[in-house]
Length: 189
Image (cartoon, rainbow, N blue to C red; front, side, top):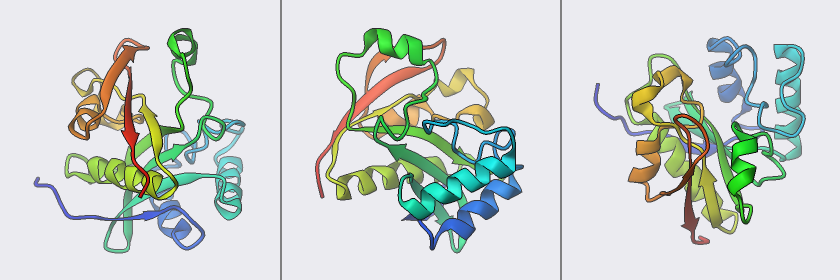
């Protein structure tokens, strides 16, 4: 399967229906997370609670994501935000042991729906997130990807290390068995 050309749009009230359709088509994502697991409150007790939490964040403008669209169909996204918006990163204790300064932005959840993986959607999402970050003033961006050779594609919710490195991210330190802290400076647009 070759790479496709995708459009990327920010998650907002207008794009919510496409985002919600992808989440619903994938059983709420990881047991009903609805991409709220990295937000301050984390996941709630049910998928419906998480859906409502995400919708309220979208309506309030307190969540960020680059949606990857194939026509009008959302096939994936790359979530990003400041550390206060996305404090609940994986391997947080290991991360905090080696942190000297928090980044301006974090890349948290990178998701591509079933049937669309390995076609360039993850790279399109990360590229789109970096472009949106540039529009929001740029700064130092961190990601927490995993070595894709060691983790099945469906569980690369932070993205693949190789994708980040292709986009110019540099390895900082390892914080998990297969997870790295990587960073890059993004100039303002």
